[in-house]
Image: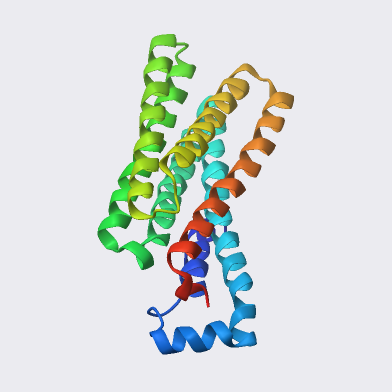
Length: 220
């Protein structure tokens, strides 16, 4: 069942925002019709829920990979890694109705880089290699900036500086979680997990609000 969640969340996002942009006349009528106006908050809420689900699945499956690798469970790690990749495709696929296939593919490559840096940091931590940790952390930060700049170039309502801050904080959560689980600091990791989950909502809502601002007709 959990394997279906990323795809279902992406489908929910696309379903929530169907159809082409409205004509000027239809746009005017919809804006002045009480029923049409009342649907805007619901459409935005549906979009936020779908994106929140996708981003939560990201941290859920990454954490599973971390636990499996630290525990030496190769089969569990392989299964969780496949879910991380599937989820990245779902997140990238969520922007395709707005920006096209090429943009979706590029975002997937950037998200793959995000996962690659996390995976490298995990391996470096398992090897107790500070230089490798530092290299992976630098890669994670550079990738966060690249994702932020890419998204900002597509949507003026996604400021690059804001996205850089949000994504850098997200990367730092991954690093902190890996360190804590490696050290057996489970109480501390529980607090980090709660912060990560809350932060995913912040990122998802920022993205949804930007989409609504750039494509208002799709939310009516």
